[in-house]
Image 1 (tube, rainbow, N blue to C red):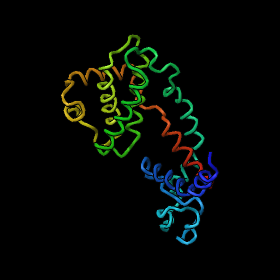
Image 2: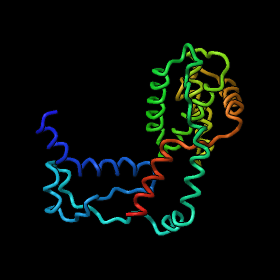
Image 3: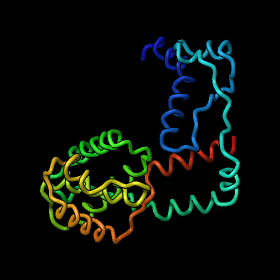
Image 4: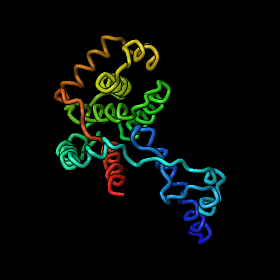
Length: 226
């Protein structure tokens, strides 16, 4: 790697760290962007990055709320143990190997599409998307026969529909899934039938820890000990 390029990466590191906190803050209202170097004035911060954005003054924020700090003091160990005990629900050593028509590439494409759908439908809680992906993966992992590739969109949208009902106060309605997301490609009866299949395949266990859950727990613990 070019040494000058390395220097540029190091010089821009503070800004990139702020970008990471900005990225995390959209997943949880408790995680807010912070300045990792504790610099408050633009003059102090300007020498750390060549970007004009880094010259903006940083607002002072608390790393954790008082009630969240108290919760971590009392239950952080139990919460972590619960994540570990249920981690097997999101582990799939042979993911999609039992599906001849649905490849991992198609799975990755439908996941990208689900995140786009979440943005267009203003789904602020990204846990909804992660739970939908987990439901979809568990459904296909427990299928004994290969499913047609045309089934992928129906399964993905139905998983999003189920996840939305589990986690959101105002969940997606069936008409939105049928008409807006799938352009009436599938009927409401097909969605309801697929929902029954997904719930049976997952043994009616809706929630499972995701990468997002682990990441947010680690971020809170880091902030707790800082």
